[in-house]
Image (tube, rainbow, N blue to C red; front, side, top):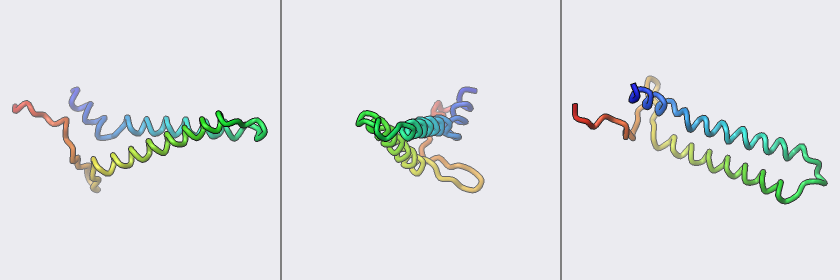
Length: 92
C-alpha cells in the first residue's frame, strides 16, 4: 500500500506542482501589494522584497523545468521514468 501511494504521488508530481503554485501565489500577492502602494511612499526595502520574490519564482521555475526534462519522457499512453530509485530491490 505504501509503495503504491509513493509511486502515485511521484508519478503525478504533486509536491513540485504544489510548491510552484504556492510560490506563484506568493509572488502575485507581493507584486499586487507593491503596485497598491502610492509611488511617493515606495522605499528600497519594499522594492527589494518584491525583487527577491520575483527572483525566487524565476529560480524555482528554472529548477522545476530542468528537473522535468531530465526525469520523464511523456508518450501518448504512459510516462516512462529514466530514474527509478523506488523500484523493489528485495529480490523476491
